[in-house]
Image 1: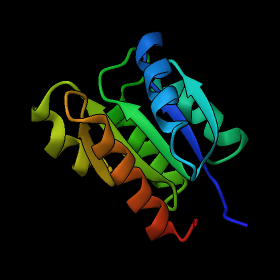
Image 2 (image 1 turned 135 degrees about the vertical axis):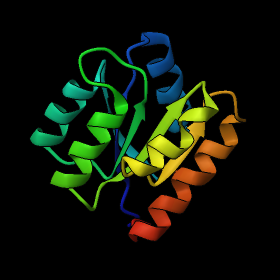
Image 3 (image 1 turned 90 degrees about the horizontal axis):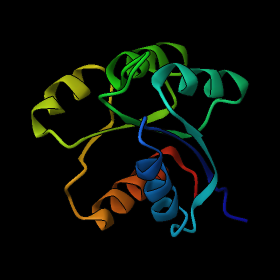
Length: 126
């Protein structure tokens, strides 16, 4: 049986979370998907049960995606991180914060699925 990867989506925009959830749910490798409205809430979900992948928006209130990425990377180095933003200029900061992948929200959705599948294959989940 194929191990499904668990995902946490953190974005302060409910529609963005819903869209990401719908997109990721089309991938047969993706298992349970949990949602958070900010980086701190994503950390709390990871405390309950560390996911395989966390998708973090960079610009969020309370705790932004960069700070959350650094915290997750320090606590759970095995967790794969995908940081997202509408603004491509955040790519270097995202990678410096520990992101495995930076995804610009304007990029084709299929590219996100390809990157997620690559992370899953690298992790050995599949």
